[in-house]
Image (cartoon, rainbow, N blue to C red; front, side, top):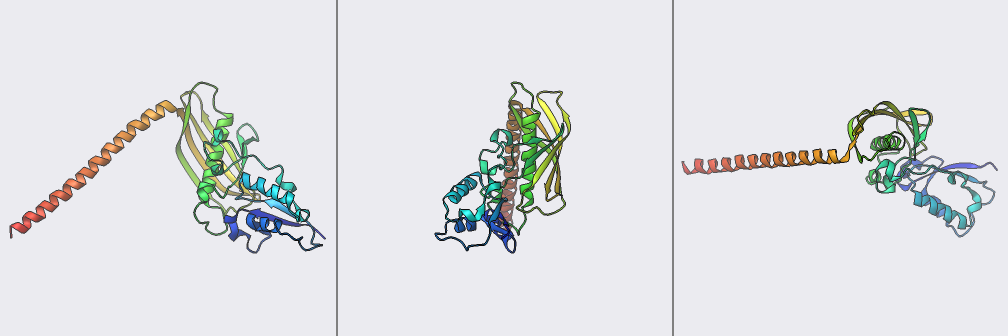
Length: 270
């Protein structure tokens, strides 16, 4: 009996598994927790990890599989050497479920690669999924995190400046749908200016690749600046915005009040 290959995805990608050699995490757990063995002579099922799985759910699944009376029917060999999710120090995301990429790997001097690692509990997966594909906003955020992680790990100077990042420009082109399968983001540093240590600038390109195809192409222009300088500028602009907003509200209120008074005078004069 030949082995069967089965993709495992998070429950929020349930629409994807219909009619395919795929299964949701919850359904797989249901098979593992059956108190009776599965049908004999059906061969072994090689399980392939897809998107939507959290680090904790993977660890829990492997523990459940080890205790399952049906563990002999499944091959989990692909689950023991998965890429590590990038740390918060590289992606600037405080909650691990919101980090969408692995720690970067350097391919050459200017090109790097990260794995796409979608956790269905992440912030961009909390609303409904439209069909079977991965939402475009998730790819944008994954590419942004990938570029940030690359710059943090490989290009930031060793000095005492506390940097904050500012996005200046971004463009996106979608060539195809992305699905809850393995994918990579290739990140390239196209230009960099490190002359002024208090304002570093980068022009970058990120390509999402899946199944040998370029799914999406994005470019980013961003700066790393002295956090104190940015905070002062931010505070100044916030004060100006607040003042302008209240002045605008006051002008609207005054116009409405004068219009109401004018209407009353017009009625009195009849």
